[in-house]
Length: 396
Ligand SMILES: Cc1cc2nc3c(=O)[nH]c(=O)nc-3n(C[C@H](O)[C@H](O)[C@H](O)COP(=O)(O)OP(=O)(O)OC[C@H]3O[C@@H](n4cnc5c(N)ncnc54)[C@H](O)[C@@H]3O)c2cc1C
Image (cartoon, rainbow, N blue to C red; front, side):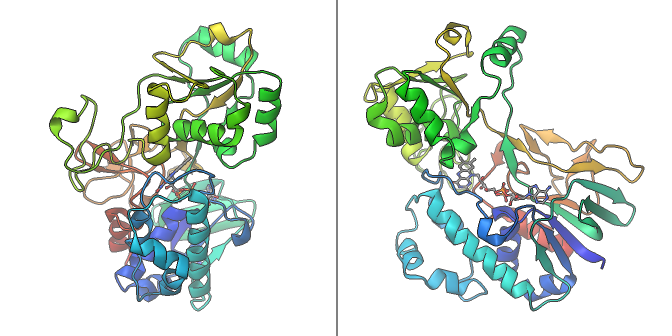
């Protein structure tokens, strides 16, 4: 059956569309349009977005603030644990708790869809390719194909392969670390045994990267392996010292040249700064309170590490996870990007190719950041930010 809208991915960003529609009291209108949500994970029970054993980089209010208290998701807000969160919305929680809460929101969406025969969320359905046509988009996979007038890409991102521009460095890594660990798996607890073995054998650990993921990885390793780590056994290699999140109103005299003050909230480095335990870990390392950790700031040089063969963890960031996109002539369609994120047209909010909006094609979530002045808004604005509202306005 043809639908008005298809959404690829049913992660937090896709949930944000339903939450925004409920907030605007337009959820029934949205559901009656006919929506096909394609989610590649096998079932809602295996839905594990954000299930990392680390602190969130944003307060819980960023997840709760956009949910209408008397709307479709009200039951989720009424649980005693969530009522506690609402009492102290500035709290920073473990992402595993947030992930479990988001899974409940996903279950609500599935339940409300059941009352609207034209709308469905299908698990175990990976979209491999998208073909644009004059009247819409065809999504395809090994399950078949389906057509809609509008398409929202909400496929998230995956760990970026190491980007080594220097040929010597690339060769060194390919030869000595053909399969580095990825911070994503480490933070999901999938590499604990391997890490313990390595540390038990006296091997050092190298973390490459300077993002929230990198310092969350260091915090995770200190927490999990703390007493097993020898002094100077965990090395962090980052190109430049990461910026720190700071409260609104931080005096200009305390800002560093690269710090960005968010025009909406007044926070410093709102979208890219280290917060919570990741921030605290960096400060502890810099002040010598974490003797196991050594921080190396500058262009990474792995040559000196070759002989010692430490375990390498790639925490250099994420890249958008995209199905293959083709235009109406069947040619590959390249989306415009800016600072690793897909660009949106400032007026129509559609994704663009060669500077032109692609009619009916939207993106939300990781990899599809909104731009506010010089600020790239990533990660924390799906539920209450403008992105979901802009998409709804276009399709409703
Ligand atoms: C270590 C770490 C910590 C983070 N901490 C925070 C935080 O504290 N706060 C915050 O707001 N954000 C945080 N983020 C960013 C976070 O990942 C996003 O906020 C959120 O998960 C993004 O949601 P999303 O829906 O865009 O992507 P994802 O969570 O990646 O979800 C995408 C969904 O699309 C599905 N999918 C992908 N491709 C296809 C396809 N081809 N066909 C069908 N389905 C597909 C996936 O299975 C998945 O369910 C963190 C990220 C990382 C890596």
